[in-house]
Figure (cartoon, one colour):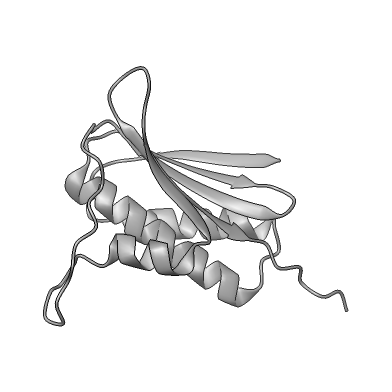
Length: 131
């Protein structure tokens, strides 16, 4: 297993920085484009939630395993993430619904001991055919 880790500030540019970071880390895994797009989208959603609702520092970890890739986002707020029911005109509120719909495995876990939580998801790796 290979892991890549970065600390992010609670600023509006962190979701974009996280997308680039996870894309670079996933390059090691040679993920097909559709999987990479979902990986970047869900990472952006979790980091956005941490920036808006969590407490810094925010830590992003990408773990590449043989059969899956896991993204974990940690912040120091003990408040668990809440799934909202967004209406068609709401700007936000769809992050966890997207994670739930697109990730086969995900969870939010309170850190023990200490303050904070980690929200993670896993995507199955789809092998890229060799030429």
